[in-house]
Amino acid sequence: MTVTFSAPTLTTDRLTLRAPQLGDFDVLAGFYASPRSHFVGGPQTPELAWRTLAQEAGHWVLRGFGRWTVVETATQTPVGTVGLWHPEGFPERELGWDLFDGATGKGYATEAAIAARHHAYTTLGWTTLISLVADGNDASARVAKRLGATRDGDFTHERYGPMQVWRHPGPEARA
Amino acid sequence: MTAAPVITGAQTRLRPHVMTDMEAFQAFYQSDRAQFVTKPANRTHLWYGFAAEVGSWTLTGMGSWAIDVDGQLAGQVSVTHPPHFPETELGWILFDDFEGRSIAFEAATLALTYTRETIRPASLVSYIDARNSRSIALAERLGATLDPNADTWDDADVVYRHKVGMAA
Image (cartoon, rainbow over all chains, first blue to last red; front, side, top):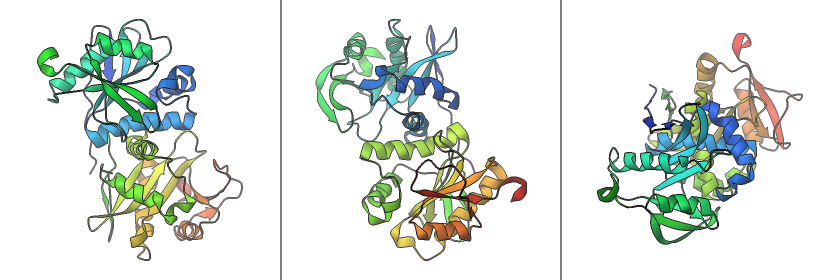
């Protein structure tokens, strides 16, 4: 017996949110080798980048939800990892976004996060969501603000250090 | 999203990991039994290692199984080939209370058969700490032989080679 289930594919005007795949490794390893990843646990060796990608896939199996690889629909280029995340060590379920090099400044994080949040509040029936933003990651804090989230205290992660908690508007306001 | 296939033997059942298995591994890594394996530095790393071996099935068609004995978690057997491994590896972890009953041997045999018949890697080895005599004894009981010329990813390890393909 083999258990399988599908991660749903979400689409927005410009983006496709699909399940993580083996072929995402090179771009993810590139991201985790770059200074851009220092707010999210990087830089990492290829060994740890593999664990990160495989963990994203395992998260779907273990939790029944997870983060998508975000692909620019027109070019089929992976531009980031966005979605619903609850790894061990997080205080509650999180809406997270990481954009790869060259994908910033286009509103992609916001566009993908809106789709992921809508999925959480409608299909999954969740009633609240936070986003954790590492202290000093101003670009990510701006995305949280653009999404209508507001500051809701602080959290210290055992590996990522001090983080700001941003809480999203509930489904009644946004869904 | 593919999870590990369930495989049933005489006294063990290989099944996909579930979230609650993680606590048993947390306890294992705190114990002396973990002296020969790479320990996660904290619970975040534990999650990454655990979830990665689950997600490995989706990405590569291989990964780790929980070893279930009468509904209890007895350990883990895994077939993985992350980028830093020179070859595909068959690995095992057995918890303290399940020693001496050939449970690891049966679980590894089930995984080995599945690997030979379904995964069919180009080659298959077990990386074992050179001081871990009990694990080396299990590799030999499984029919693997020491390959002194094989590449390792950890200098503390010796490499035992399993027969796969036409040679198996």
